[in-house]
Length: 159
Image (tube, rainbow, N blue to C red; front, side, top):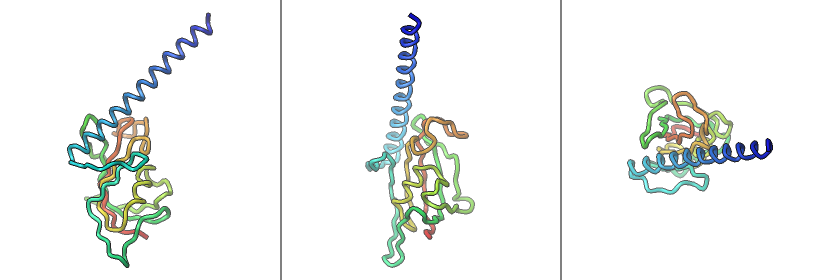
């Protein structure tokens, strides 16, 4: 009888947890859809669910540099989290100095490392990163759990 009781309680808890995760994923998806609609973005995500929307690409053939893992990239960015169909700024370098990161070395969230490899020197882009490539189900400062992040980036240099 004890085992049956334990089994039933465990089953109910697992069901509740999976329903909660599904609800969080649906909320995250609806926040991303709202952001895309509000900003008139009609682009499909990459296979991993990350969006890379290039607003400006200036290609000079002999000077064009595509970002690769291991490159040092200098960029400006504004970072937002999506919640309740709104976006909230939580960090920006546009009013200060740009940052330099080594791509692929886990100096930034995984989704940003992945997305940067689709960009070139001088690109201006919007990157939408699902929570599984950001902070997942953890609260990170002001960023709620299971929040998609949006980065507006301007690539300044690639070395």
